[in-house]
Image (tube, rainbow, N blue to C red; front, side, top):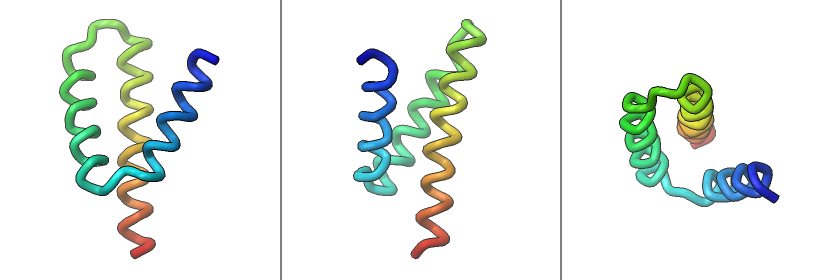
Amino acid sequence: MGILFDMAAFYRWLDTASDRELLARRDDSVNVESRLTDDDLKRDMKRLIRIIEEELVTRKFRA
């Protein structure tokens, strides 16, 4: 299952998380990303951060 399972779990969490949880995870992810040295891992973290931010924007305009 590997990465596909992990991404499926991430998207399930994304659908059910509160705005507060999304903001907390985004902030934690930004903090972790800033300390990473591996460029590929940094790119992956930035992608997840972007997905969280897109969800926050989508919710804002849906409300």
